[in-house]
Amino acid sequence: MFIGMTVIPVGKGLDIRGWNEMHPLNGPAWSLFFEYIANIAYALFLRKVSKIVLGILVFIAAGITIHYAFTNPHGDIIGGWSIDDATQMRIGFTRLSFPFLMGILLARVGKLKYTKNAFLTTSILLIILFAFPRLGGNTAPWKNAFYECFTLMIMFPIVILLGAGGKVVGEKANQFCKFLGDISYPIYITHFPLVYVYMAWVTNGKHTLDEPISWIMGFATVIISIIMAYVFMRFYDIPVRKWLAKKIISK
Image (cartoon, rainbow, N blue to C red):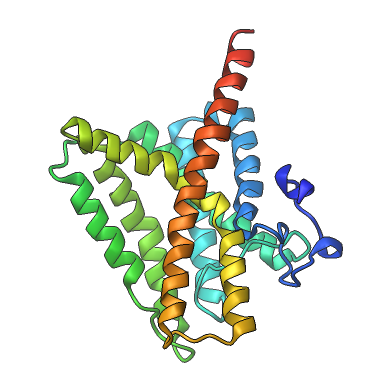
């Protein structure tokens, strides 16, 4: 747990869950490992490259992503959470490269235009994209590969541009949107241990989705995750960030 709090990845020797994860007590923390690498790369040289060079890097990253998606027997881009597996490391860097580089490119060249009802429009788009079923099955995995690449490279940048061009009207709407933005990452990085507990409860008790108690406990897991994330954000994350900013910026 202490090592996990430092976000230092671990190998198989400390993989107590047996899922070959670099952060066995908090699976989603694997993305932080790659985000640290991306931010270091940005600080050292990516922030200095020209738009043309950045566009070339985005094109190369897109090619790497498409190649992996269509050559992967499963037809998806899932994985990246193991530091001991070369394939998993490849997936991790593949998942990192295009979104990160495209985000920088959009910030530099994107011309924002006002989007009417941006919150509603982008919300509906995301619901459709996330709810879309897996395509092709085991016989035609290329269909799912096509959909994932289309979603990642076309639709997500469109959603970002639409959202960035939106205007939130009203104090309550501003507060609500700010809350969603503030709480999104705390939920992501703290919810998984609770999910582990819920999974253990289902498995050990041999519960099924036909039982009302399973739905009640699942709903409770969601609510507790939100409350826990808010508490950590409000009383730990925000104060620590303010303290660090004051110490570092003042110098």
